[in-house]
Amino acid sequence: MSDFDDVCVLLPTMDEVETVARVVEEFRAVGLDEVLVIDGGSTDGTRSAASEAGARVVEQSGRGKGQAVREAVRDHIDAPYVVMADADATYDADDVEAMLDPLFTGDADHVIGNRFADMRPGAMTRLNRIGNRLINAAFRAIHGERYRDILSGYRAFTRESFLRLHLTADGFGIETEMAVECVKNRVRVTVVPITYRERPGGSATNLHPIRDGGVIIIELYRKAKTNNPLFYFGSLGAVSTGTGGVLTAYVLYRWFVHGEAHQIVAIGAVGAAILGIQLLVFGVLADMILSLHREQVTRYERALADRPAAQSSTAQSSTAATTADGA
Image (tube, rainbow, N blue to C red; front, side, top):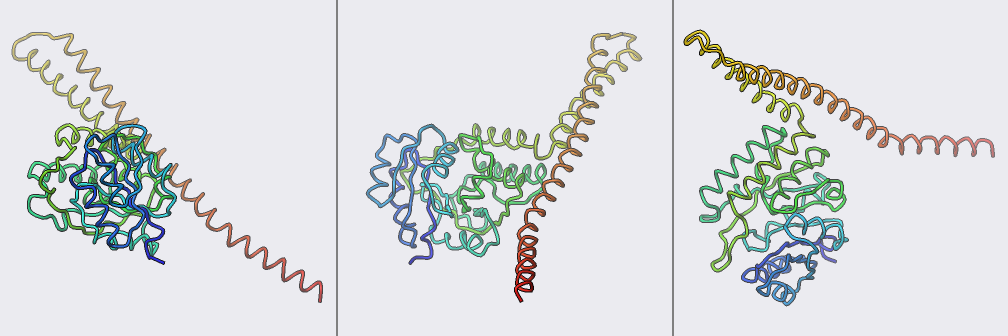
């Protein structure tokens, strides 16, 4: 019996015929026999290549990596542990044991592979490096956790913990959303170093740095609304208040220096300042409500954890009483 019998490798694909067979074979070579390729409608023979290499292949019902991952875990995977990777041969199958070890030992429910720990030359452009660093810094500032590489496509997680996440992203924002939801749902996360390789010649990336980077930033900010409302509403309030302050300074300058009145601009300045203050206050209140909610959830979870112990103690007392009566 293999150590990996309870593990399924998940490979979302879209026109990856140049590399998918190699990736499937590498994972199978390290002992992972269950490899699921979920394909987004490739037209280059990706599905045939994956099937011939020994993978189980299904075609996703929708479009986008995010939708593919959600559908695969929900409908096509029964294994308790899932390893998610890209089919472009940039990840090393030999790292899978390090990825799975925190799950097997019970130290984590979600593992992220840190590509920056061993990034090979040519694996990532300078623009992408800068963008990744900025996005990780923004994630740390907004959500308060340092996961080092939230955009990594090399993940390992328990299926149960994945199903607890409320995921809606359809495209490449799925990794970012998973990281945010892990923070929100207090899923235990471990980051492990991995090797990140250059894409083999002949294969093309489906990632568009500017477009997909913008989507990821928007997703980070949008998720702050429920995970860090003080930042979300506070930043909007600060911008609105700052705008009101700039407009006020302009009106006063024109009035004192040139003797000109700008009533319309003055009204706009007052409105922006009031809106900004209201947003700041709302952010503070929302943050207080969220804190109270988290405290209640913590108490509820503790109560559930203590219940089996209390029931066991009651059962033992009943057994002892019955034995005494019989005696």
